[in-house]
Length: 241
Image (cartoon, rainbow, N blue to C red):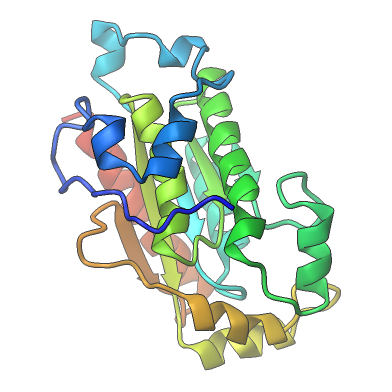
C-alpha cells in the first residue's frame, strides 16, 4: 500500500513558485518516487521550460473541496463558467475518476480507505495537468480532499511543473447543516450516513496551508458564489499587476 503520511511543506503566500524544493527532500518518499515518472501531461508543451511571456502568467488548478453536501459542484461550475475554465467533476458517480468499487462502497455507506483514494486523486491531478497542457489557463476541479495528505497528492502537480499554481477552496459548514442538505437529496449515490464518516476523518486546512481559502457555506448559495468568485479574481488579478 502506498503511504502518504508526511505532509508536503507549503510555500508562504507570495513566495516565488518557480523554484520548488528538490523532490527527494521535500516530498514523502512514496510521492517523490511516483513524481519522478513523467506522465503524458509532463511531456506536453506546458511542461517545457517557460518562455518569457509564459513566465509572466501562471496556470492555475482550482480545487473546490469539502465534505458531502457543502456545494462543491455548484460552486465549482460557477467558477468555471464565470472564468471560461474547463471543469472536472471529481466526485461524480457517473465519471471515470472513481472506480466502480469506490462508488459501490459510497452508495452502500462503506467509508473509503486511503488505499481506495490514491488512484482517484492521481487521476484528478493528471487530468488537470492534461487540460492545462491543451492550452487552458486554469482548470476547476471538485474533490473532497478531506485530509492534508490527499491535498498533498494534488500539490505534486506544482513539482512536475513550476508554472502551475495550486489553490484549494475549502467549503466549510457545521456537520448538522451538511447532514440536512444531504438528507434532502434525491437519487444521489452518497447517502446522509456518509457525512458522519467524512467528518470522522476530516482534517480542516491548517494555518500553514497558505494555498487554501476557506468559505463559510452555511450562508445562501448566492453569497457563497460571490465570495468564491471574489477570491479567485483576487488571485488572478494579482498576476496582471
